[in-house]
Length: 191
Image 1 (cartoon, rainbow, N blue to C red):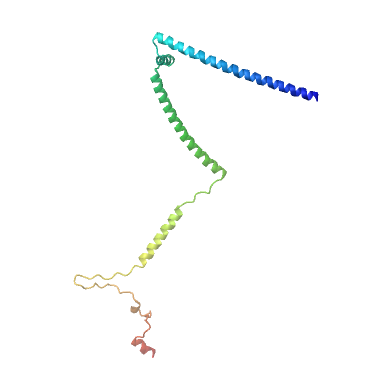
Image 2 (image 1 turned 45 degrees about the vertical axis):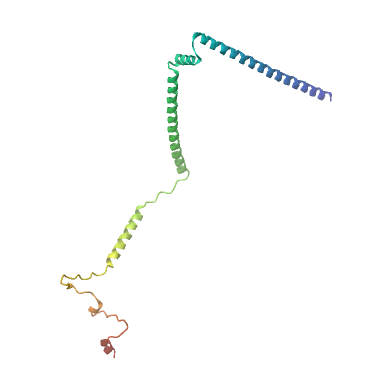
């Protein structure tokens, strides 16, 4: 039991030491941050004072640094940056469109490989069938046209046709149909 208590006490003391170490490290980092901030403020103020003594403002300093580094002024650099950004956006838009087209093509190709579709049916047999139907309808319509009536002359006389009309009454081999009443000639024959 003594060993358990000894280990527990050792763990507590190690935990306390680690906690104290972390706390002192945090305080040290905070102090270093504060000192660093104060020194950088002091250095910035000193640099501004030195620039003021030479007659250079901070904006002019930035301009001179940009001029020395690139050989262009800040305005030219800004203009070049805008132009480059515009070109970049244009290229990305084009690549997005191309990617979308390629994606659609790849999907279609993959779908065709996985499950081949039915072959497309041809439409021309239906066109021929519809054309044949129209021809048949026109033939029926022309075969059932009524007989033309004779046209009257200027005198009011009707021109007679050279050919005789084909009626059953004019044909002796075909009996005439009646309306159910007998004519006097037929009545004598039937007696």
